[in-house]
Length: 300
Image (cartoon, rainbow, N blue to C red; front, side):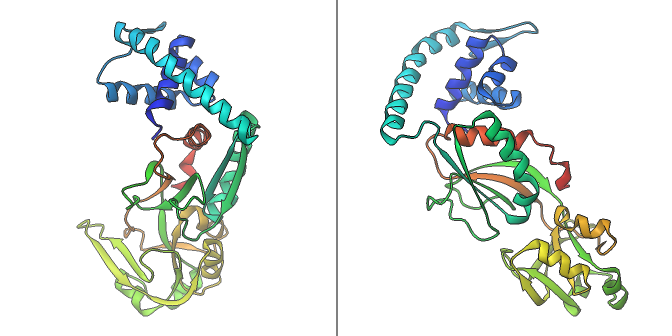
């Protein structure tokens, strides 16, 4: 989540622009992001800062008083930031983004294009990898990941969208193997994604009881890339558990079909993860707003 100082900047922009939409255009953020930032600031302060009507936005008495006081703080921070940028020689800074390879190849070009069009002064470094990324080790400023809810309590994260994950196999493979229940997966070759946290233990949710059942599968072939696993599954090499957006091309071509559709793995998300910043840097906040504004129905 953006830090309080960034929320203060957004609050002042709304006040100066007399509206959320105008402030969003000025800052290059989405209107929901601007609305959320002001709401978070009001919640932190336990005080209403703005009065919203159908025609305009105005400050409450508390909002006017607060704005007068924080403007000086923001101005001092801006002067300090400018002095530091002058010393480092970087006017726009650098944003390092990590994302999974298959996801990044499909969706990051559009996102990067939008970001560069709005803030060309900020250098954007994209690192596409399916491997583990140490968000605390300084290797990136922001990471997009497809996984369950992050378990690390010190990180900052935001759920972007749900991601459909499914069991797939080729029609020829299905014809040769009788797969009627999850237990049948233990008796046929399976293709395992090596970066899967549980390895060759696939957790599937019972459609009747809702309980999660762990299934130990035969990991006949292991790979660290989803695209390759989809191609192998399409060639009849085994059952694969993968996001729908990776399997879609093979499914559209008739080389893969969805099996055991009632049995689903636990919920998986597209999540934005950040190091434990005191406040989220503006480039990361701007990129997050662009990511949130995308139509992610393609992941379902």
